[in-house]
Image (cartoon, rainbow, N blue to C red; front, side, top):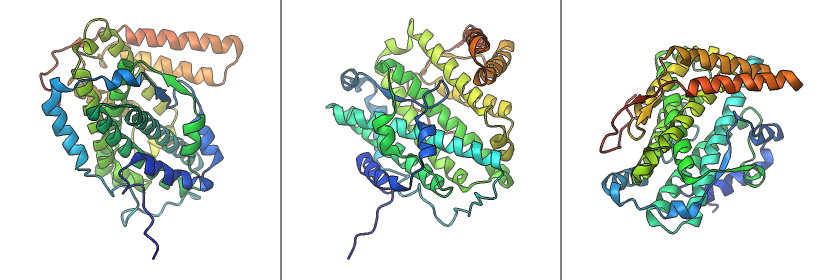
Length: 367
């Protein structure tokens, strides 16, 4: 008797999950994979780092919180969740408005690439490391990210496309970041991911007529995984006070500004997607920035002043420069790039809000 075929939602090992997904690559779409392969300021990247430095982390200063978080992740509350069930509505991809379909596919491919990027990084740390605390954490996070990527690809296959994750692993360009930059960038990626998904989920709970695709029903459990991953990076940073003090505060401000600005510009490239959700992109951005700023106070000693008069103006200038860059060549493109750089500098130089970081960084999802 043949053993039942496993689904990515039930697999607890990232390597096994990726092997299963690679075995499905024959049905994957060249177009979606090419989109995922792009390397621009707005597309998700694959990262590598100094794994030996990360392997040397001593979690003793945060041992109690660390053990609680690991126990929660080991319990695997979302095992078996990320797959279609009776709540998965039929999607009329052929009847979907063309611009909405284009933007939604772009959203799904970008999300799949971002989840898979995390999986690749975490899996590599688990493979290279010898520190039992660190390798266990990264194995658990790689497990979650592999499930998320597999689930998005399941949704994409209904539209006749999917991302060839095995091809991405081998061919996509990797960007080297020092470990501390990995902490800042990935922490913010996980926390802003939580804020984004929970904001959409709560909006669609209250306005179900705007839920044009069933994948949004899975966003609450999805964003809770993102939240846990952010908690892990907060604890990693808490092990070394130097990471969140002195000149490193300027790096924190840079990453906060870059992540917020990138989200704003990227979301404004999808007007039909946000219109279908019944969400104004400016309102959505401010909601997500507000939530992320509150959450990041657990470990960062500053937050950005997103209510400063220059903030919204700077974002709009950056967005306009990005639009002009897309279709420009020669001097016009250089001029647009200079305008974009000036807008970013204007955002970065807005005075930050300072606060005391709490003794214990652990938080629970509250939105």
